[in-house]
Length: 466
Image (cartoon, rainbow, N blue to C red; front, side, top):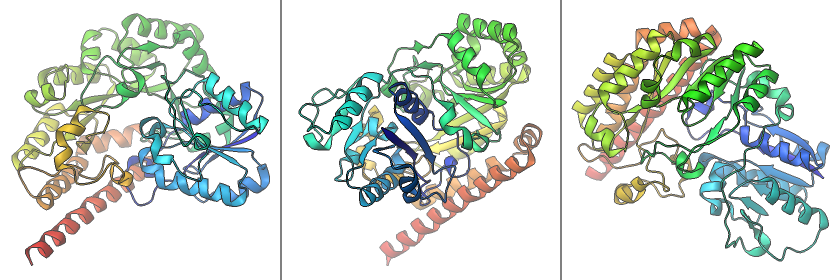
């Protein structure tokens, strides 16, 4: 059968980094692998890379029997829009939806325009579904991990963890020069393990992938890297630096096979501290940046987040990376119980750490984490306000200042962080000038959103007073 796989257009109502920086659709590529293994003809329409792309043109030319759409939380509106367009062109097209949002909230897509929603993805459940579609028979029983419209989206066996599948990069070949990560372009994305030992109570990834680590054989990964044409690779594991023996084998294989790439990865503070003598070798083999979740300037708050490191250990980890010429990209959470002085303390701590890049977002109490129940009574939006759960908007009512005052502090902090001279010099050295300009554009866009939110909440408070 012919299957059209679609990544939706960016939701223009929101501002997240993917509005101007985005990587390859790894999940879609894995699905493409499964479908091709089973003999189906696959075409990818990546509307994030092709913002003016028209679904109708693809349907008319490719004539798919099935359209599969990937999803994130902020994509719900566009996913349903794509499904509706597909059914308008041909009511017999089967529309299936997968991706992160389908895993977390499959009911987001329980719509008359959607036929099947994947909570988990394996070779087995795809095979069973595609055979059912090809047969044209009425569905009589649920398939593990899939909610089907014909069964009123009911399924007693919701699913399991996603199976590791090597992504099919051929399906995204015509887009790959556009994929980037921060300022590195073209940049591939590779996942080498699933799950996480660090059960931070604000993080949803270990809930989705499991609390124990499942590693892919490192020889398979290096073989995959050998075949990639991109000079940059984002390793999207929760913590790539966790296993010392595996990292040593990784370096050994890269050296033996003379694989020359530049790598960015996620790494925890403890993983860095445990392997401080390994980073010289990792740098020689291409590790250029590590994204570290510092989260707070306050040790008490780190304990509340279930972080295993202290603020002093954060500083030691940063210096280990920097001594080995590896950039540190630090991330922080803006807590709703902060006062104005707390924002100043974070800025002071940031100036002490001096990470090459810094990202931050208001605390996001994802419904799969304990934080959701803790802050339920203070939520400013419903779970179904999908556009708001974007790591940019403030979701929890601040406790020590008005919402308007809080947005003002976020606005001031955003400006202060992005005026960092050492971060600016780093971007000029590390990235092509055009990508530095894109990042500047992204900062200006984010700044404008916070300005808009500040004035929106200001006018709202004025109306309440009146």
